[in-house]
Length: 384
Image (cartoon, rainbow, N blue to C red; front, side):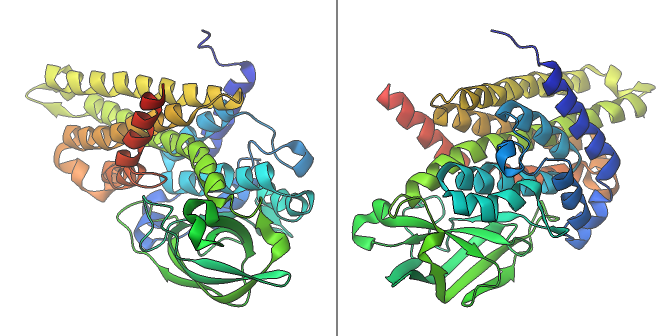
């Protein structure tokens, strides 16, 4: 086993760190105002961070999943809202279209998505699987798609859609044959502005408030049959395979939050005095910091292992589930400990660690809750 990052990996990590620390500004203010980071996302696209694993043939950066993990951690360390915008575009949208799209679909949609830009404007995508009654049970789709000549007619509602109000391209999962249940779900590429497609309520959230989350509505929405992604009835398979990779992205986002929590707590512990000495000299504080550092190393290794397996086209569903389960739990725990170390200051906005906690919680919920990850892991164990 070789745990040494290559020179290329280190360069990518440093580039992401430099961008995050120098270009991602006003995270507290954007969080408070729930403002989408348009200019930051455009710059991410210009630097190749929105299509990191897309082939250069389609204007992607052609990097591996390990590079993606390293960049995601650095971006999320500064602002997890920017991290999830980047994750969805990379892991769920670009990957799905590159893996299952036709040459025409790749040319029309993947190329601008990989750059994050089209005609000088931001161009990102959204992954639309969840519904009001289809969260963890993704097979319970009620959005329908009925064939009508060379089109499909979509009707239904999607919710909890990241990048929902800002995307130009949406991957919509809909039931094309109810009798086949999971095998009757198909995926469609739907463009913003398609008649019958409506962007509904934008959610007010506990955390990652600078990313946009909303519901979508479809009323007799006519989508060309040529916009079906993959074969009819393969939508559930596409969704599950996409989420395997997406969980590596969310684990990386959680790593960033945990790393930021540790860095802030360590810095504060070296500055704050209590009972005549710096609080870092108190053994109780040292124990907290040591536990945070130990679990962060473990979470990072688990996430890199899943990425390594993905890069080698090995089966990695279990490893992605383990990485997300462990890293997301750590993100919440590390943020809580950072607040505790800060004391009263940790509870106020100025010191940022309260934002880390609010941002961390969602990593235990989206792209498969922690309970779902345990099911994924257990099922794999039973098959062994």
